[in-house]
Image (cartoon, helix red, strand yellow):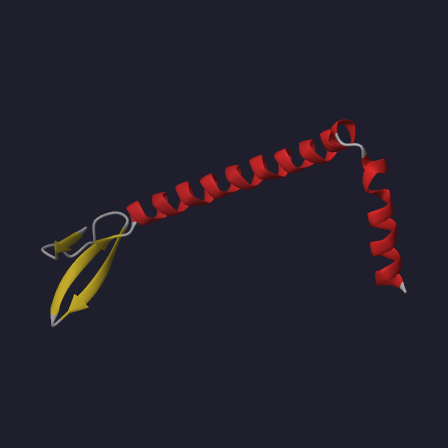
Length: 82
């Protein structure tokens, strides 16, 4: 939000900006709140994805028959290691 400067003191959480010789106040409090909300959301998503990946790693051996893929694993490992 942009407000014309009619005061000597800026409103709380605002920054003074000069544009074409006129002074304006920019409300920066709202942007900090948006940034905090975005950071909280991204952290929640990354934690949720980490928990799902860990759960999948723990459940996969119970569901899949890994012996069926053993020859493919062995041939790929021997190809990579030489």
